[in-house]
Image (tube, rainbow, N blue to C red; front, side, top):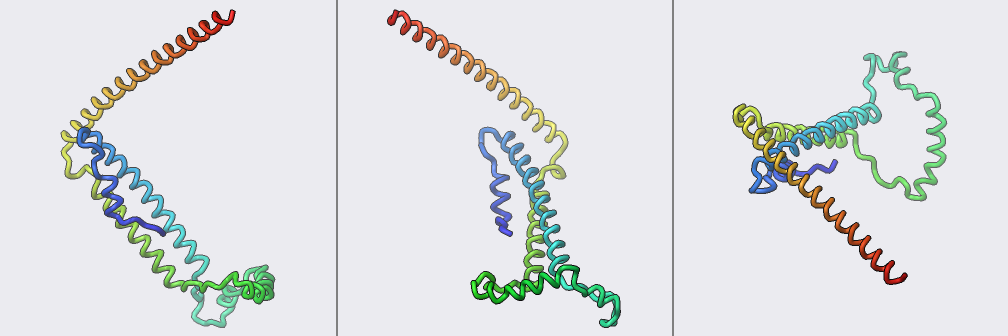
Length: 193
């Protein structure tokens, strides 16, 4: 898996966007961290799923009984129905595929793949721990959190008023453009008639 260094990811999401809007940048950084935490958790679940799937499909089966010649072990190691045909077809085509060079890469060992998958899970777990540690909460007083929420509400009201003013200005400019187009079209009509 392609993992970015944890410090770079956290730095990009924690660094304030603007010095003027410290409360807003803190809120944005917090929401970015929450979003990033959700993404990391989803990635961790996918990594667990991929690892379990790899072990199920590529791992050697453990003997069910200590006696290797027992019926239980022989039944467990028996090929699945239809696999004999596929194996025979692969062996007959094996000379052709080797001649064409389709499968010239050596297959990685089971242990090396498991080590890589385990390392990816450990790195993702550490990344999640760092994101959780960077979230506000335990070290922040409730009064401070309420003040920050109040500041954000005031800032949101101000931005909403600015948005409404811009919408009104846009509507006025649109009306002016429509009137101008109508005046020009009437002027052209009068000159041609």
